[in-house]
Length: 353
Image (tube, rainbow, N blue to C red):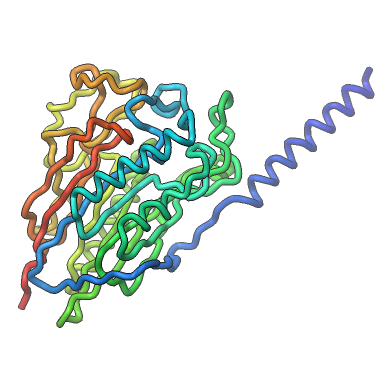
């Protein structure tokens, strides 16, 4: 009996070592800054004084439509039920994007290869439907995510995607601070900024695009570190004489949004404190439209009743002083295809001496 117990313990220890070794060896370890491939070709030209339209939308890996909940938000699901459901959500988002006729689109939670979305390559689908250029930066890559135990996420490769109708010269993945320690870090998100340059005709200035998806569940220090890195980047680019538009899912309430419109219904669930914009110089501004929520909590399927649904305004844009806000609107898509509503922005690149 002692020999059986001893051998069982030895086998158990070996299995643990093998599993831990597997996760350690396969962990995605991006560099601080990495080049990003820009595919496609932009045909439109952009110059100072021009007005443009942008859209940002967290796609919820096309599995978090109005019928779903999600285990991280207090629900039970980790994926869509069928491949057909995922493809229908992708197609629906493509139709909505096309109807807005935007020059630039920021997308988040776009899967290229993931069990949770039935391995549909959404990056290719969005790029081919939009035309122009497409860039993609990975922010979640794991050979196997073991949670939730009853239905593990499994293998994931996902990230953020920028689509433009303009030619682009350069794109890069900028690593965001990450406080997750080993072994949790081996299968956690590795957040980033996707920075992209668009040249301006007749000028040595550029329009700098920053697509982002900041942490939701990290501690306050990590959230502050990520926000500070973003602020430092946009300030640096503006001081070079460039125009800067940063946008995406901040996972924090956008400054200027009326928090009383969407009060906390249950403090046991995810809350979105307001972004601390105090470190930004005068002229920089966050912009949002709080007349419609940009996101909902996924503790249950969408009830279509705002009074019983936890809602947020966490998607929007950050503009440099030389970018004039003309209009911003959160499109009320009723969370049909994802747990976020798209936000449409119209701006003008102000002429500078």
